[in-house]
Length: 54
Figure 1: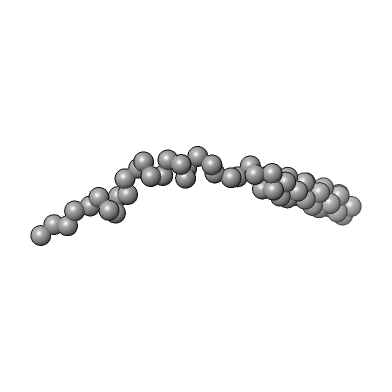
Figure 2: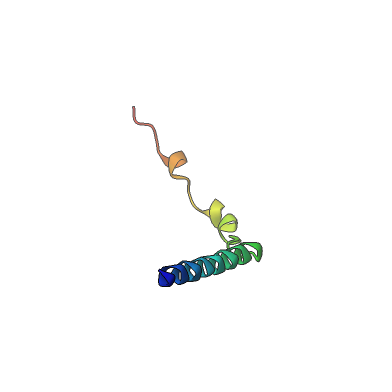
């Protein structure tokens, strides 16, 4: 029974580490997309290009 408690504690510590790492990455701007907005106007919009058939 004590092994299960130790594994649960280790699992919580590891999950907390990943959570702290994720929060740090978001706050430091790791997920900011600076490339797509500058090239978005270069690609055609598929909905606007379609022609109506009579």
